[in-house]
Image 1 (tube, rainbow, N blue to C red):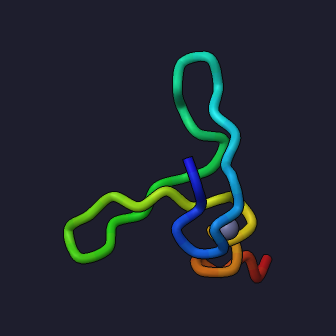
Image 2: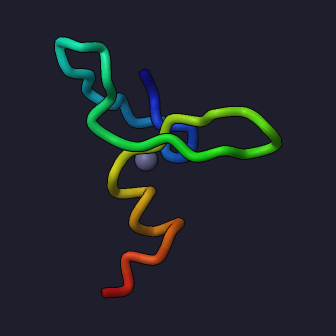
Length: 45
Ligand SMILES: [Zn+2]
C-alpha cells in the first residue's frame, strides 16, 4: 500500500490495516501515511 501523496510505502499490520490513514477524495478512499496526514490535516498542534 503506497501513500497516495508522497508515494512512500505504508506498512500494513497483520490484519491488513495500514499504519496510516485513509481520506476521501472525489468519492475515492485514498491511503495516506501519517506524515502526509499531519501535513494535510493540520498537524499544527
Ligand atoms: Zn505520505
